[in-house]
Amino acid sequence: MQGGKLRPIDNYSSSLINDTVTVSEKPVTHSIDEIALLITKLSKSALKKGMKELFGKTADLKSAYRQLAISDESLKYSYLSVFDPVDKKPKAFRQLAVPFGSTKAVYFFLRVARALWTILVKGALIPTTNYFDDFVLLALSGDRSSCSHVFDEVMKLLGWKLSEDKSTDWSTTFEALGVLFEIDQTGSGVLKVRNTEKRREELTSLIKGFLGSGVMTQKEALQLR
Image (tube, helix red, strand yellow):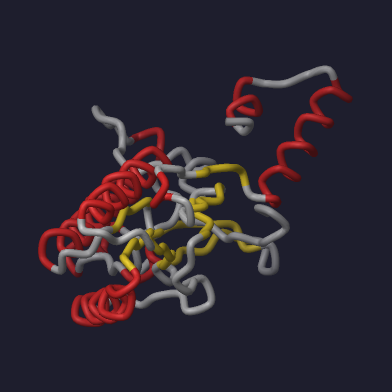
């Protein structure tokens, strides 16, 4: 469960498969800092051209990992054995898509996501950032329609499906990575970034729980970041 929502994963940790993976580098993704930097750069550039209105929106890939198939050559290695509580015996299942929960899959997916971001930025000239399957798009007032159209067409051309229910409309305020960006005053050199109401409630609940128990593990402390 995450935020009251059931999120099924391919558990590669309990089976110790993830323990067999060695990585020598940290995955690199765009964070809040990169989004803020892009907003700042765009707003300064717009001011030089006498434009002040900057807008943002978010887009999300639908079941991103499931959109990437395991290669035919690797399918013979994609079997997992799990215990069936109904028949009371282990059963083997073959996975056809990249597993959501595999350490190796995370690095693989991030390479694909970074390639997609590069195409959007350098090929389609769309100001955007990428965090796993989440994209933040920015545009001036007169560019919103063309930016949305090009983004959607690039995704269709490359065969990616978007989560229609998670995509937002252009606005001077938008949520991304758990924070709220207010860009309505960027023309005056002001950018506001703060926790969303949902995130504030989550933090309040966590802190009260730690104070009540008097105990907080290192892993739990990282949730307060």
